[in-house]
Image (tube, rainbow, N blue to C red; front, side, top):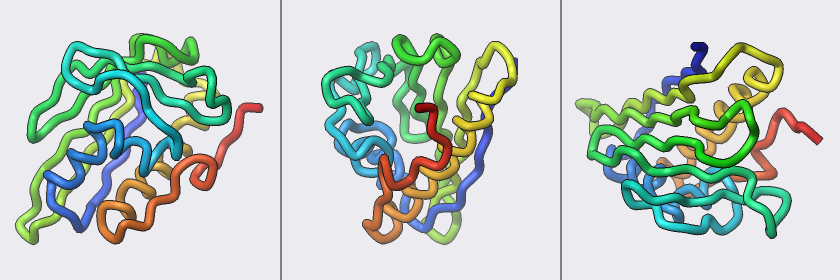
Length: 149
C-alpha cells in the first residue's frame, strides 16, 4: 500500500511539537484554523472541520500517544482516507530541536487525490514547523495548495 511521507527539521523541542499534533488546540492552530471537537485521548474520536463549520471533514481515533509517536486512524472522511493512519514520529535532536517523520499510511492506491493530499500535508506541516518555532501558523485556508471543489 502506498504512503505519503515527509521529513521536517523543527527548531522546537519534541514536547512542543507533540503538543501541537496530539491536542485539539494544537491541531486547530496549524491545520484546521477551526475548532476541533471530540476527545483526543487514546481510544477516543475527534473531528476536524474546514470549509463547512457544521459538518466535519474527517474524524480520527487516537490510537497511540507516547512521547515519541502520535498516531491517528481515520474513521470518517473521504473514502480514500478511511482506515488510513497518520503517524507523527518525533526524534529529539542534539541541538534541542525535533526531527518529525510524518506518514499518512495505508492508501489503497496512488491517485491524483493522494498526490494533492501530499502537497497539502507538506503545506500544513510547514505551518506546524513555523508555528512551533515562531508562533506564526498558516492553517486552512491559507495553507491549502490543492483544492477539491
